[in-house]
Length: 381
Image 1 (tube, rainbow, N blue to C red):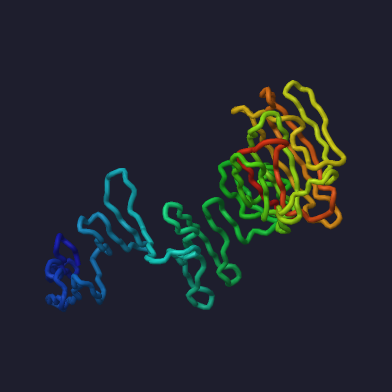
Image 2: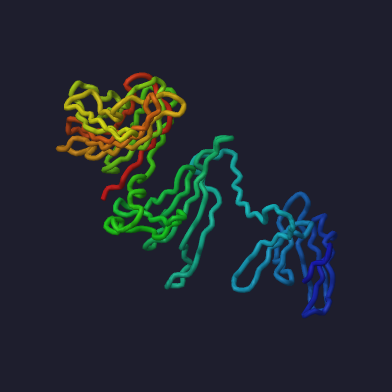
């Protein structure tokens, strides 16, 4: 069969056998029957009010036209290849494949379009080997979020191995002793490596410093940044990266901890010890420290509050849940002082108690702060 305009020509090895005019089928109702030299073609008519068209429509050339203009078509080609064809000379995109789920009550975690990849197993059974699908994360109008998930078969079980969410790429099967490795173009070069192998890789500091992003805080004129509900036994090390500006000139940054998820941050006169050194841009330096304090000092001197001043740095937390070790911090902070001189404070400190802490607070000696704070979990190894 060959479609030409509003008709279908019936041919047998190139020999003309008859014509079906498409206009004859518009009204719906009884099936249209066309007799040729050697047989009969019956096509069910689809009524305008809806209905079901039965039977198989087989067009010569394996081409099915989808629109009146004839620009979009399905084509079956050799070697199991099916194509969606779109004839267009403009700069616009196309063709599009749209999988739409119509729901009057969309909800969080609703699965949407799914593409399954099947093949045979060694016993000749049809077997799912891979699957990609989309899930609603937030259906709220104007602030919608979604996730894109990938499942593969692992030892005979469909297993979720990767999720693309609004803030990150997650690898659910990744264990603490393994990590992804990326090249200079941010492409994965190996799906996983052992902790020992990581030691021989360039860029190991970059991988270790970032870990897994757990939460982002964006204080704006806040008295403190309270990091709660993130520090657990899931990770044995944490990294807290921050970029902060202070509202009051010449104030210092402090750190405090809590073992009750931020209910009451420890501030006793001897709760903390710390030691450090501040280097100045004029190549001088000054030590700072305390054997008993109400907080850990993060900057050895004051931070300026001008538009081009502020503080950036990282806080490392270890031994957060040890029954015998004090929770320890290693700090590294760069900042501009009230005269816009560059300074760097590197130090350490601990909570002078072997309690398992689960919350950290960043605050200033006076006034409020604004900026961004991110906490990362470093996998157990």
